[in-house]
Amino acid sequence: MTKDATALVRSQFGVAASDYATSEVHAKGESLARIVELAAPQHSWRVLDIATGAGHMAAAFAPHVANVVASDITDEMLAQTAKLAADKKLDNIGTAKAEAGALPFEDASFDLVCCRLAAHHFPDLGRFVSEARRVLKENGRFALVDNVAPDAQQLLGASPSEIVDATAAYNTFEKLRDPSHGHAPPPETWIGLLENAGFRIVAREQFGKELDFKSWVTRMRCTPETITELERILVSGPQNLRSFLKPRRDETGALHFTLQELLVIADKIA
Ligand SMILES: C[S@@+](CC[C@H](N)C(=O)[O-])C[C@H]1O[C@@H](n2cnc3c(N)ncnc32)[C@H](O)[C@@H]1O
Image 1 (cartoon, rainbow, N blue to C red):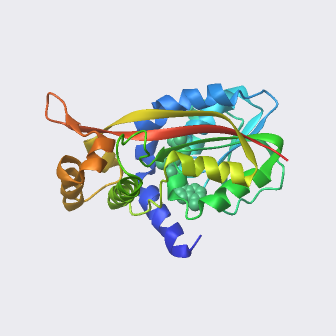
Image 2 (image 1 turned 135 degrees about the horizontal axis):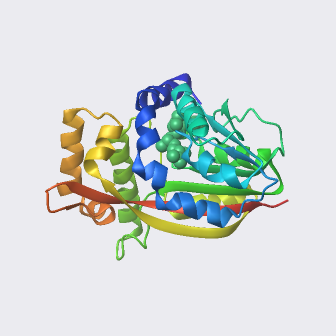
């Protein structure tokens, strides 16, 4: 990862760390309980959470396993994770500074590697998947949740080139809100990356995640100009992007939209 990319992530997330600690989307999102259920953790397991943010997923797994290493490249996020672990009296959570594409851990040292709502920041998804596989024990389990771009199921009737355009428009929209956003591919790209790296898919689900526009932009400390432009795109941007994001106003006039989260459980195969 280049120094610039690392600095961008740290500057975005360093100031926003405490907001991620209280964000409902991160602390209580539907995928959090479901990923624990589908990963079927065992008491003896050693777990690595990559890009733990404020530590919500590490805290969700901790009561079910022997220990969790909660890792991230942003110090302020690791401090939030340590605070969450202390508040919840989860003394089997430790923190470690680690970049997703160059993990500072021995080969075959974890039973489960998980990563939630973060991979779209990583500069090289192939390296991330291969590092996750390297640090997993034989038959180890990988549990991934991330926002995904539109596919043919989301945009019924759209041509392949319209879907490619909608994927680009979606990533541009995300990057405008958060300059450290890298790339969120459509679901099939994740499946291909995992299978090609030596994983067998054991479960796969997709959720629509409802977002409140105001808290979404506030969490990333967007400027008033950026907020105006993001709202313009949501309300009158490309048709296929709007079909995907489903913008709508509630009775108070507040704007809401939907993102898609993909959840994949995959086992390491020889
Ligand atoms: C949205 S937060 C993660 C949310 C968290 N996993 C959860 O479930 O609540 C994204 C995190 O990714 C981290 N991050 C971004 N790029 C990274 C990288 N290349 N390696 C490790 N962590 C990274 C950021 O520092 C930030 O803490």
